[in-house]
Image (cartoon, rainbow, N blue to C red; front, side, top):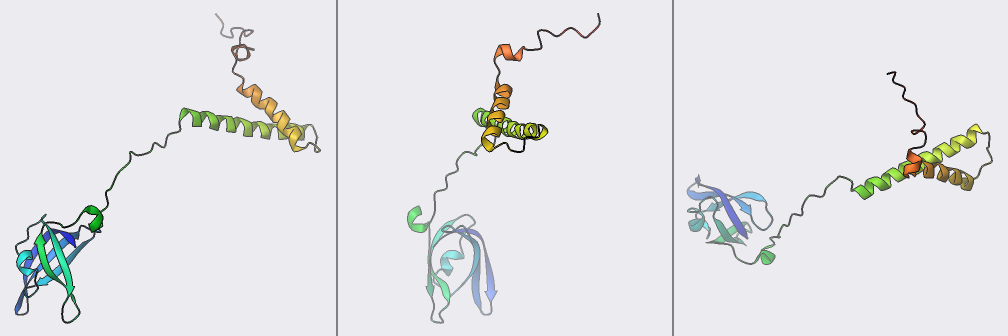
Length: 168
């Protein structure tokens, strides 16, 4: 296991000496701590470990079936693939703003939906309860075409004949 030392502290455990190692497991990114007793193989290396140093630790079971650090050596062993490290690539954050094409499409949907509602209302006002879907869609298309027609001659209708309403 490859680790990076966060902190070490020599402590007494009864008659034995131990080093409490706080570390980051470089294989899974988890932070943990381990008491390495003076009679464990990794003790001599870990008692002199400094913050930020990286080590390769071999875990093994002792005679009582407990996991201990049997040995430790400075430096990490293996490639990122072999140690389970993953290369993290960060893509640029995606914009949540609509593109001009998306905005235009949304506006058309709004006009079409509004035109359908207006066509249904028109048939209702006229008392035509027998209109089928195709008739409603045809009328809605007429409304939508009128709303979406941006030709210069259509835009100026009514504006040219306006009289100035501000008294001079």
